[in-house]
Length: 255
Image (cartoon, rainbow, N blue to C red; front, side, top):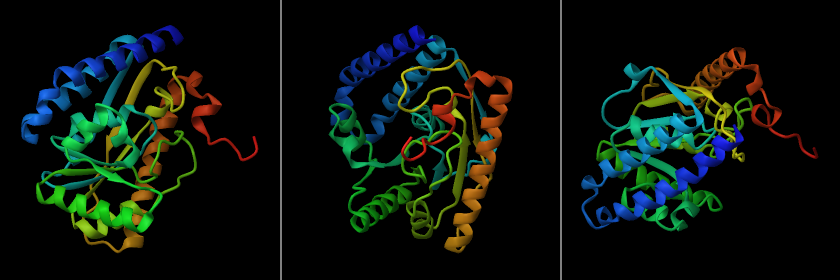
């Protein structure tokens, strides 16, 4: 398992650099000509993950995805869902931390394809900038993808939802698609070891626009947490060896 993980990590980064350099001319073209390149990169990365690490996928609830502009609120446990959500939507727009734009090559592509960077250290300005970018993307019929907890979390960590997703829901007036998953069991955060198995991603019924903020927040949290726990527990029932302490719970303070 460790050897396969090392091979994948090396192949993943080499493939990214090669593809980013090879396709770099698209950075000089109108955005619409470059999206096939983005989808090729995501698909090739997932292919490497499947072939080298033995990780397959199951996508549930595709029929729940509304057409047109959409707010997608997804659980965030690993890098896997970032790649998979790119392929699930035609022109996704991620809300992401500003520092990612500083990464050579990768940051250039983020900027080119209209992603929304936020400075998490300046909350008021971050909300304003996020709203402006999201409204522009919605006007173009794009899908806004936000991770409500703001960062990767262990699969069974207590939920820690931030205000950003509620703010966007109120501001955009579009449906919100909750997306649950169990990817952290197989591609753990802060670990180079990948575990063999099947990652499940579930698109839940969309939450219609127009709900009160507190009602929306409760509804989103309840749906996401309930489905995520079911997906994680189902995977653990099939393979108890996935239940490593470092991937199913947040470390306790002082531990």
